[in-house]
Length: 121
Length: 121
Image 1 (tube, rainbow over the protein chains, first blue to last red):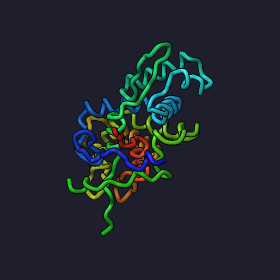
Image 2: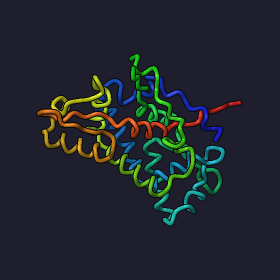
Image 3: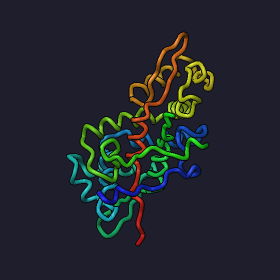
Image 4: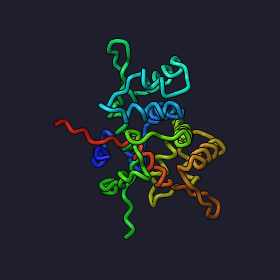
């Protein structure tokens, strides 16, 4: 768990304006809506979870496919949706494609939902 | 902008296990997928943005409706979806309903996307 102790700085207003901050433009809202559509599927969330938590930061499609009772083409489709949303990236090496998360994208989302700490004074 | 200087602690592993952490259960993945489905609409994202950034932490439905070229029933529908996803809560006072974000839910999402800080040593 030690790798969870330090989290990336999500307070940078340029990369990560929060929902509690400036108004989203229509374009930003449309782009983010597309990302959330990609995340609105339980299998895709579990794939993203497996990729984000993989040893060495990357997961072989061969391991991802074996973890679900779904066909390889179905898993490939879900991975393509995650990739098109900019959440993951893939690299072919030999027989297999290896996936890793796009950290900038996840950090952007983390910052989006960050709330100002409440002061009760 | 001063209220953005301090962000809530999202390192609590109970409230906010990150995607880079333990495996999501099927139930957690299904629940989160439903939340992201609620977020996969640009108008709902902009409504949530307006509520999260409202003065005093709450927004009157009268102000929200006026900000869009949409009918009041359409805005009501979108607010209902956000409410059913646990992202906002509403309270009727007199003629109007006042909405505020559910901070625990947003903090959960912020923590979900938090990444361990990279050490390049």
